[in-house]
Amino acid sequence: MSATHPTLSVCNLAKRYGETPVFSNVTLDVAPGEFVAIVGESGVGKSTLLNCMAGLDTWDKGSVVLAGENLAELGDDQRALLRRRRVGFVFQAFHVLPHLDVAQNVALPLMLLGETDDARVEAMLDAVGLAGLGPRLPQQLSGGQLQRVAIARALVHRPALLLADEPTGNLDPATALKVMDVLVAQTRGHGASLVLVTHSEAAAARADRVLLLTSEGVAPRVHPA
Picture (cartoon, one colour):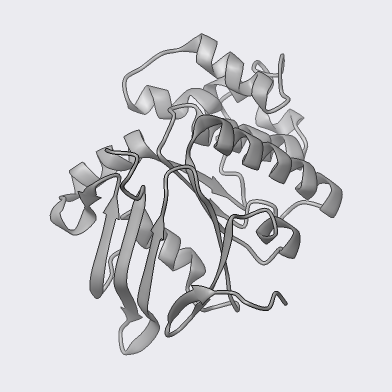
């Protein structure tokens, strides 16, 4: 994909649950290496929008083009393979596997692609400040450390797009600041695009752009709350 094309292009996206509209007319492009924060009231569909961007959820109107691929034209298996290759995820709840050690958790995206690269896993752990902790189990880490594991896992396969859903929501303010430092530094260092859904003003302030999602679409947020 040429660097002149967006990593992600969403056009006139609309989503309903039965007769209940969630959002409509959502249009946005995310450039390679750009950090976009999406804010909005609870229940407006921010997490649902992220799921649509990754092809994890369906929509009722519009299009999503990820890394040059129109998701509506891909089957389930093709979408899954595109996600494995091109997308990384960071969630509020960490989603690390308790029966795997830290290094194995970070290596999961590579394993799903049939790859093994212990040196890259070690380099990612070092980059997020967890050097030497690969053999530990998740239960032996703090919340902030677990979120760093999630960031390392999300970037180890060098995705084009990182999707982060309230990644600091379970952390105290000081730890949240440190985690955002790592997230932003690593995303920019890898040249990945980052779309962050957040209620945190401190997290949103780090973005290149802040967009407000409402039921009628997204628009630049002119006046931060």
